[in-house]
Image (cartoon, rainbow, N blue to C red; front, side, top):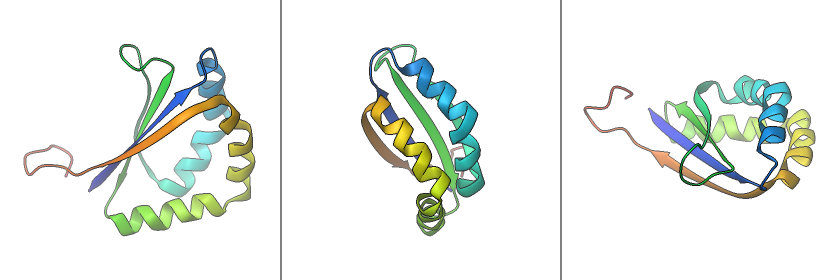
Amino acid sequence: MIVEERTYHVITGKLPEVVKLYDEEGIALQQAHLGNLLGWFTVDVGELSSVVSLWGYESYGERERRRAELQADERWKSFLARLQPLLHTQWNRILVPTSFSPIR
């Protein structure tokens, strides 16, 4: 399994709006296409005004296929049009488990 860590830094003061928008619309769309949500978090210490999501995939190929399906969904495009003005930056990392990781 690989884990995709997606971090979004939100415009200061807009974090509650982003969380509400994701809760009401975004997360259901993502889960329908991406599948294995491991967690969705806000940051309490460190890079404040940030949200972090962790998604599990069996392979890079599965990730690529699922993300392409999400990007093709018109409902997702509509959601992004409302979300993107609330975001400042985004970064992604692919985490590969070690042999002793509980998630493999």
